Length: 95
Image 1 (cartoon, rainbow, N blue to C red):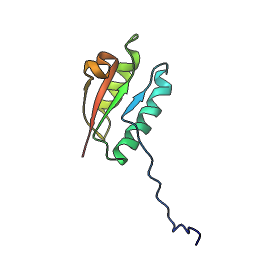
Image 2 (spheres, rainbow, N blue to C red; image 1 turned 180 degrees about the horizontal axis):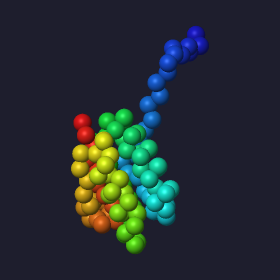
Image 3 (cartoon, rainbow, N blue to C red; image 1 turned 60 degrees about the horizontal axis):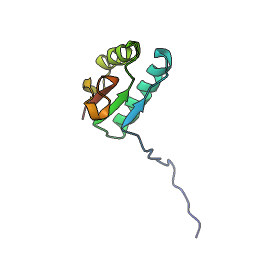
Image 4 (cartoon, one colour; image 1 turned 120 degrees about the horizontal axis):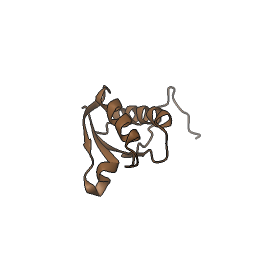
């Protein structure tokens, strides 16, 4: 008997724990960050990491500014050394 899908079909997408923004401009990174955080929240992730690198610090500042004003973000801090230290940010997402 062939498979018959019932509509609407819900597709569960795997969401990574980490978003790597290396090499992106602020203008390229912010929409990716927004999408990643929304997907993480919808996938019930409660802790994720944003890798922005150290560089000049412009991307880190932009990411952290955006995180301060984001509705899904409970808190954010520099990642521990195993996750990139100052080159990454740990984000805790609201329940």
